[in-house]
Image (tube, rainbow, N blue to C red):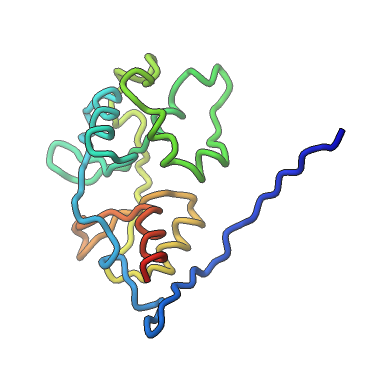
Length: 178
């Protein structure tokens, strides 16, 4: 009986954007970012957060406080990783979740949010380590940051002001369109 072989192929960096006459370094965060920012308030319950994600078809958001200041980032993975569904053992983010955060969006619905986290507030599960780039950051650098830090979204700043968000899908779209 043969043993199945599973192969893992690491992505090749740097990303090469193929389009005649377009230098890959000319594509910036500003050109591919989503400028419609849908923040989550830090006092929002996780259940309300999942409803926000569903309503806007997103899997993560910047987190703001009462004064509108950026205090963190939250994603569907944060919801799942803070649940007791995984038992008493310490939850370590798996390679699957690091690489497939957007896939977890489909599973996160009002009916699915584990009871033990539904009434927690966003500030209880968010990441306070916010990774950001400037509007002038080249897409190649954006991809390197996402890959190295194993994250799926970067906040885009212009002079310290939040002006957009970049997801892995935005980066992939830029590669495909250029």
